[in-house]
Length: 137
Image (cartoon, rainbow, N blue to C red; front, side, top):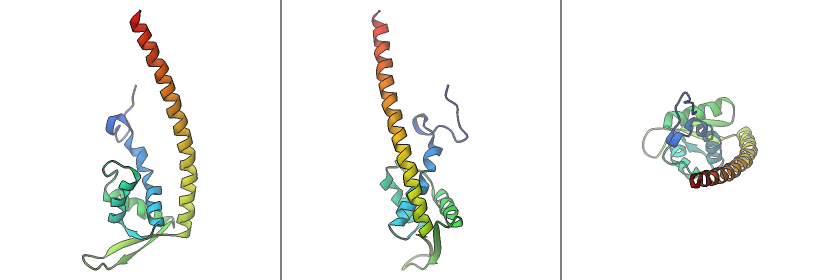
């Protein structure tokens, strides 16, 4: 029986809130490439394979504020050539170390997920094969 979480199941029954945690290392990696403002970071999240925006701007700014409070990024107001001033974010040395820690954790998660998918597909192939045989009796 599927249990509905606080925020629902998301598309096709998946739990979308889990993928939101992945936004943090994505933002760190984008900032590793160079300083950026929040809206630009939001637009560049597409490069990580998200279908549509996984979050709105308020979510991105909340994550950036948290990263700044923990010393992983810094920010300052920057006057643009046109338009209003924007807050520009920069990765700190501690943020770079934190990104490396995320990568180690994500690589282990990747290994576990691949094992899960391998077991799942093997099980389903066997399970569906047995269903076909039962239908013939």
